[in-house]
Length: 123
Picture 1 (spheres, rainbow, N blue to C red):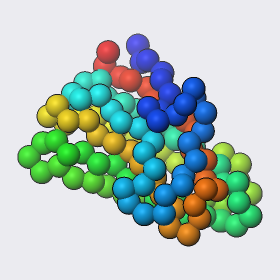
Picture 2: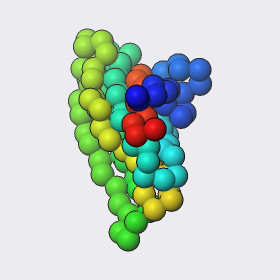
Picture 3: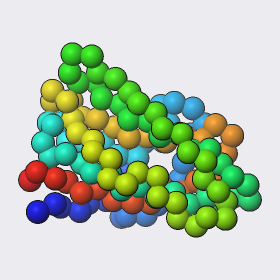
Picture 4: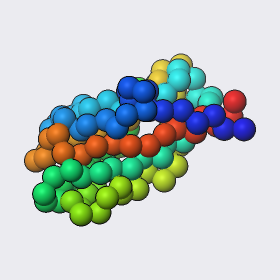
């Protein structure tokens, strides 16, 4: 059965404010060191500003023969309330090295709030 946990960088389950405007970004979550358990990421964003804002999410996996990173960009409307951005993205450590999820907003620091949780699968 999956274990539901808060993001590793959330204090007491509180939202995480995206304050960085460039990579590596505001750290949201770090996985375990091994490839098991897989972390299933459910991430929502609320735009507290007065105009639409662009969110850039980055996953980084330094383990394995090649390592690597991926980015995802999404515009978060200021009138939308909570916007689902990651509907269960699987993320796991590679070859004993944890993977990370971070976020930044080039033009709009301090107005995007990250909410969500992680299901740890394969326990």
